[in-house]
Length: 588
Image 1 (cartoon, rainbow, N blue to C red):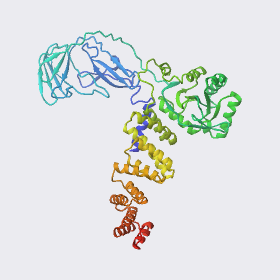
Image 2: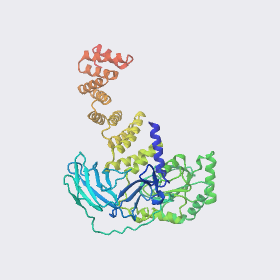
Image 3: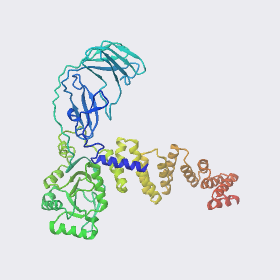
Image 4: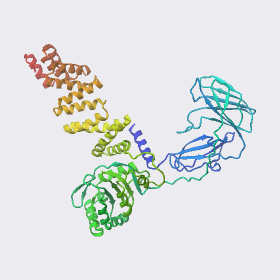
């Protein structure tokens, strides 16, 4: 099963990055010759587009009596209308069925049209091809026939009805049970459809990507050449450009020189530049660092912050590239830059060099994120937005999931908290909530095992806030509060877990032990009794129940449960000590 999931994951990654099941294959059109073989008329029909087509839906779009075709494609153009302008003077009949005792759309109805040449049969069905639905008008080509003798409809459910007043080259509405075909006349209007040639757009790599929905960036930590630890965006209170470069990359060096020469303009614009060399993964990282430092200081006189990009930092930037860019190369292109706004959100990605003028213009526009002109500036085509800018929890969740899958859990947790806040205000699908809750639950469990109980409460609290009906998370919240000595909160979460599922061992047992410590012995005995009913061979449960019964004065029953604890676990020191106390007439 894991191999199966991995296979699909890799296939979907391929699709997201511009791959295709059938891309770069021309559409095929086959003509029914009435014999045993079809004729390939793809080229002569003009339908052999180089689109990554998914479906075709026939419909008489211009109401001229012949069928036109709508094509839907995965890549651009996503829709094509191919208008049928054939010169043949053939005849047709179009029927719209309306069910009364069957389904209203009469899906499943079978229509027979009788002419002098014989019978023509059509069936009305829902769905015509992958992700497509043609018109529900049943269109019947009559060829040279001009007279219709009879139309017979077998409605869903088996009722058969005949209509005899249908005429060729007309459209009729057939109402179940009426027996009369009512002619339908098209509206009187004139729509000019101008033919055009829309070529298949060739895939290209965008060099400047302006993000409409800005997302917070994970912490990008590096050591500056001055040996000071630096974190982006935490150590910056204004916009910052992260620039990736290498000493062997000529465009990188040219770009850095332009940045250095524009120092005064950049200082006026009130933003920072951080140049990070990516050669830390070389065989000799110390030599790579000295080489990069020498390049910046001696050959470029770079006046801004600089350092080495660690593999972890590059991994985080790669996550952002994967999230927002299709048709991307496997590794980061050099130079690459990331413009981060004053709130720590990614605003623009540059694949390749960026000019000083463009960079300054983008920095100046960071405060204008709701300006349509700014948002449309990064698109390769004209248009307008029909919705408002908003950070979608779906995008943020995808970022969180990708960070988690790469082992970047601290960043995933930090951004996961923001995603949880967005979901609490807007709602989200249960699968999304469950995935995010699992992230916090696993972090809380790990902190619980490490005895970091405050952190456990924080993470488990997020898990139950996102998914309140998760009994294991509620139980572990109780455990964390219990270890902190906050017994009131612990009791509350144990009780919540039991309201969700009364057959859980751990909350019953933990409540029993908690009540024993608070001298609420009768309540303790009830929960401990429930615990051993759920797990009769639970030695600790018998031991604690024996203590509770002894305190309630049930000496014989107490000894019975303490004996059972020792039978199940002969080395149980607490049970042995408690039994000795009860046999001696003492209360443990």
